[in-house]
Figure 1 (cartoon, rainbow, N blue to C red):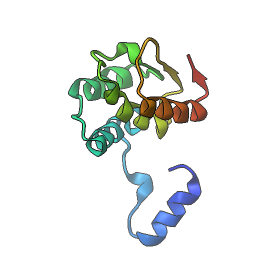
Figure 2: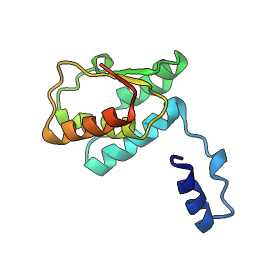
Figure 3: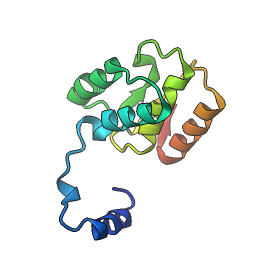
Figure 4: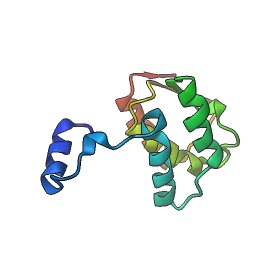
Length: 121
């Protein structure tokens, strides 16, 4: 959990729970976060994205998130939960997004991700 002080404040309320032992899942928990944000935004979870992240990306230790490798991201609203998941994810170290139409919400989300990630192209 980032920053570390957040974990200490949460454990104050739940001292019996061992947060350090909760598994994140493949790719730093990307799929869980993505699915949660799809629910939040009222969008369906794309099973193909979850499968690719949990199986192909994780198995090959890919650290570069490339939007071009996602199939049929034609609805710019589909991008919001992906960028939201990347915003809190530390597995991926770089982001590639080209020729993708973004709504104002998507641009704001991308701006937040760019501020936190070191390499973007």
